[in-house]
Length: 112
Length: 116
Image (cartoon, rainbow over all chains, first blue to last red):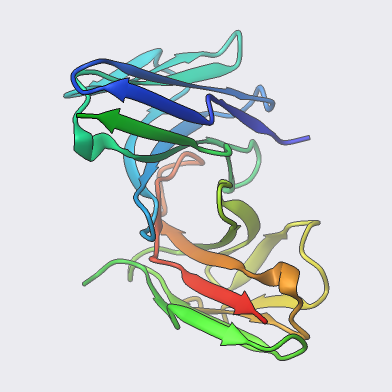
């Protein structure tokens, strides 16, 4: 069935270190992979996305990589700051539809 | 604010009562989604619309849940005979047309439901 697995569920890093969150998806025809950041009590907000025709995308301290063969994609945050502390969700589009399946989330804590 | 708006933001209801949530998408967006999120979990797909047509409804959604988008603008999500297991945040989202199937979806702030 349609599934997105996300690891780890929690991640603590020291300020200035890098953080990596990994997701795998089940639908080999998925072609769009957004990442969302959700702060406590707030809406999920898009931080970066990648389409299946590219392998990597960067936006300042954030990057996403995609390995279509292995059906996994990762979020990389460099030079982490306390304001990066939040829950991060990956998602994948489902072929033939306009819907998205989300991972279970990663709670990132950046320790000052 | 031209983002996705949801109303009410919080609702406490007694078990067995009906509740209705409203979502107003970003004005030019023709796709509208409803997701449910419980603590510690990712958003779970419920249903989505393209204009006024409901294109898919999750198998997880019982017959007590119904969603409408009568004029292709705002949408309502009704839960009948609420149960404690319905307690969650109900997120609405919308997306832009014309970019193929990889359209960015934008979420509202959510409607928190507590069933007591």
